[in-house]
Image (cartoon, rainbow, N blue to C red; front, side, top):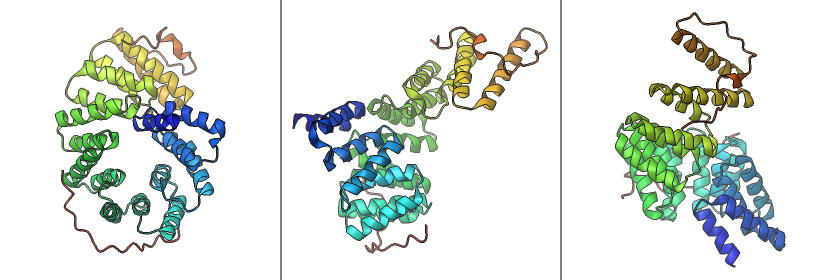
Length: 337
């Protein structure tokens, strides 16, 4: 039971890799058919943004227990991220057939409508989930996202704050508040909420990037550089950390560091197959260098070694939103897709 407890706490603290090790150990000891452990493995992969592995784990879970509704809301989140509309529609129908008055069912249907860009209907189903369970954290956060899509920032803030009141460790709500205040052009509020999100998810590049961009808007460029470098080190999901870092070094006239960051970005772009993007940056760098030397730009040889620019590319220094609830009628029409 100690291992079960530790695994649960690791996932709660977003220490997902440590949690996966414990669950793998338990599976090796004979719990391979435990639906609880399979669900926890799926949740850990979902938290780590290993979307394909999470989909496989959730699919295995539904095959082991076809009438299970626990964790199906998180399964629907994963299908939403992958934009697997047909699979999400099938899951919504299945959950509705099992029990249409469960909060998980309402969230699954809400995610389906959100994927179809029917945000008003999505809000309605998230509200129904909260009518069934007012402490349902995921529904508050997802409803905040939908209000953001509807450009109702006041209701979004209220939903995110309610989520934080339920669980102060919900990084998604902190991050959502940061995005909301960014839209409202309130950078100091934005900075505070992104800081909280980054503390909860220190190895998530999205949090570091958002924090860095906030520092940059406030002209706190040294802090911004540290954030962009952190985003690169932990694994840049968006692929923009190095280019932003290079531009900051340029603004600060740190030419060697800027060249190093540009070089590493070009190398990564080549490794990821973004060859044309790398060529454009390389040409711009060589033209700038030529202009700074008072000469005409030399012809750019695109097949030259990218490593010649710099020998060491890494040497870089409370209330519920006031929206009316319609009568609970959980029938919905998904259509042909």
